[in-house]
Length: 144
Image (tube, rainbow, N blue to C red; front, side, top):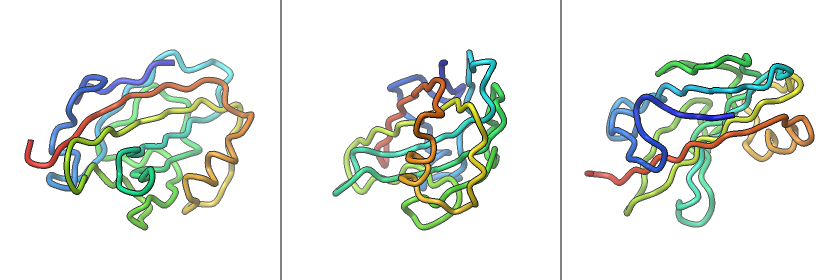
């Protein structure tokens, strides 16, 4: 699989529109080469450079095995992010340049979990159901 965005290149800077300093909406994502046997997709967006621990910005699952996630959409069930919300929480680093990992997973089943689960619960539930995965890394620094 391959994950990309029309909004930024891999390892490129995420436009402010998609951050806490802008509209704080999710960017469009393009998913290529999804396995034919995939029954659903899951997406985790997190920041490993956050102080203290990796910070979850978006947790989505039971998405259709589609080729695109449109800007400012809710493509599936949403888990709770580390802001304590069930939505996309854009990059908002306290200082410096942070990396934001957009990780898409093709799964051999729908997980059928209730909304509002934590990232760790999703990771455990995916377990051996992962058929393939892809990653896109975006960078952000306030004021850049």
